[in-house]
Length: 396
Ligand SMILES: Cc1ncc(COP(=O)(O)O)c(C=O)c1O
Figure 1: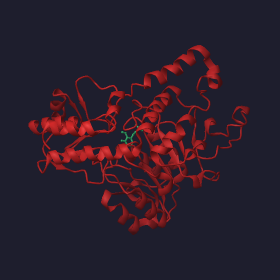
Figure 2: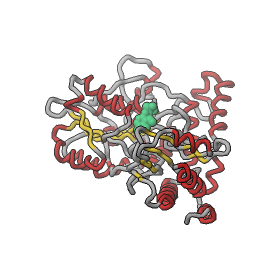
Figure 3: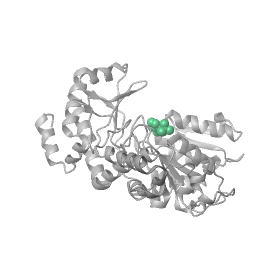
Figure 4: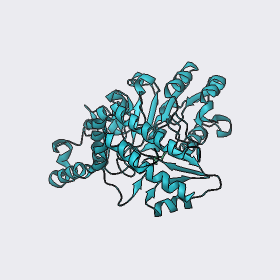
């Protein structure tokens, strides 16, 4: 297995192999950083240019007369985005960015009371999530010391069982950003709902990475970004899921903006807010069309490749990397995972990534001692994995 020929033979059998050429790759490099910023699909340029041209030629008329009119442009993405996360199209909307959507969802779905004020997140959640939940807890007049419950991934279910009656909102990630662990969303949702908690997920590292069945699993909401595994460009527009059961929950408090208003009467400019049914009712502003165009280009590729095929190649890539390492390195990522492997290097530091970069391998470092590498099934090969393992082991 540890020969380049073997890796090449796996690539030769890879039915998704041709997708690699649909992406721009930084020159002469093995890119293993799709967990941070996905590569650019070559098709993005023409999708964005089409909107630039329509803007150039039509000005404001583009809202209704562009080749893909901008008014309903976000809807061109709903079906394909919904397929990637296992939702119904009206449960999904592309808007804002991840942390903004996290806050908007908490406005509606975090309604603490004296008896039930806690938010449960996973220990070591991404800092933005920690800041967002702390600020929401304070905003409602509670204190994070008492109302923020942080537990390790393996303790989420038991913590819900033990403390569920005081938890208002269960809000872990789907895949932990540092360890790459893929949580059991269905079990967490079920456990949370059984205890009367609201359940949401931050799917930044899960969307486009692991198979998701949001509608069936039934969380109340989920949010994600599109610049990692969804390859839609730095800071690109985020995604949001609101379960169908809340589609017409007009009584839920929400922060409102005109783009969430019923589209039939939106341009009558009346003072009273009537939200659209479904996830679209949480929109605030008219979205960035240039950004949505990039997401659209990417989702078209996902639709062609299919999450099922991507998942099986992803498992094969990480499995191959793990077997090349053997017992030589401490992989902290469990078997239930996405495309990322996190390797603990006690006493190591960021310079390991610098040395890898000098040898043409891009991966990243998370303090205090974790190197993250993600072989992404759309554009990485088994030979990438082989070269990475060889260079990594030589450096260590
Ligand atoms: C798990 C997770 N949550 C939240 C964020 C913050 O995302 P944004 O800057 O798009 O709000 C990130 C960014 O990488 C992330 O990985």
